[in-house]
Amino acid sequence: MALLLWLPTLVCWAEIPDKPKPERLVNDFAGLLSATQKQVLEDSLVAFNKATSTQICVVTVMSLDGYDIADYAQQLGEKWGVGTKKHNNGAILLVKPKTEREKGRAFIATGYGLEASLPDIICYRIVNNVMIPYFRNNDYGGGIMAGAEYMMRATRGEFTAEAEEDDFPYVIVVFIIIIVILMISAGRNGKGGGGSNNDTDYRPRRRVTYNDPFSQGSFGGSVFGGGRSSGGFGGGFGGGFGGFGGGSFGGGGGGGSW
Image (cartoon, rainbow, N blue to C red):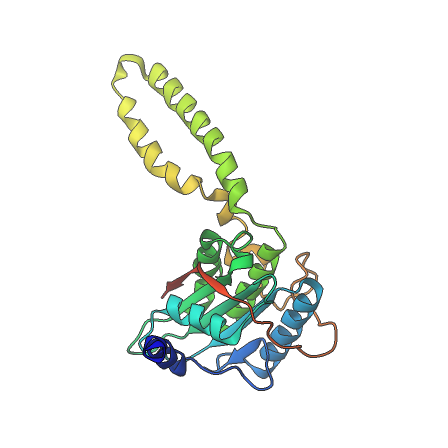
């Protein structure tokens, strides 16, 4: 009976790729990266893992085999055990390229231990604001490397959803004050209805602190450019990847399509 209960899980996992041998952090099954890009990215992610214990694993596939991409990424991370068992600090950056028949899709799945520094909204914005603009120009290497760098920066605490929420009530207060002043100034001219347009414009402003850092051009060019203050790429620490640590995934993440 117990075997029958486990059978659906075993069947699903059979469709998820096995861990590579030797284990590595960049797994370009779809062939989207050049040899140089793969080496630079692998070295950088290995160095980041050694410095922080956080494991960011990049995976590209040509097909999701009928899976929803979020499920695929979560099951892949769980099956491979990305992250440490103690901290569950692993993340999967999964990309399926666009084809003549199917949309392209990308998703960032996070382990339990990264859900604070990589919450769903930040994962969503990394994919949609940083990566997909590259992908639309058929620059998969640029998009993947930029996305990985933003993930490293986020896990260092450079971007926080909490700070955004803390500022939000103050923005509402300022907005209300401005509307009241405009209505008083309009007086008898009957133009107070203009407030509806301001309200329409307001919703994106809640996210302005995300739009600035999470944009394709915020590095001032290619992710291969030197001298960036973020320090994401530009050489590893020497030595190879020590292997995945048995981390678990909690269903967090975000993604998009093009």
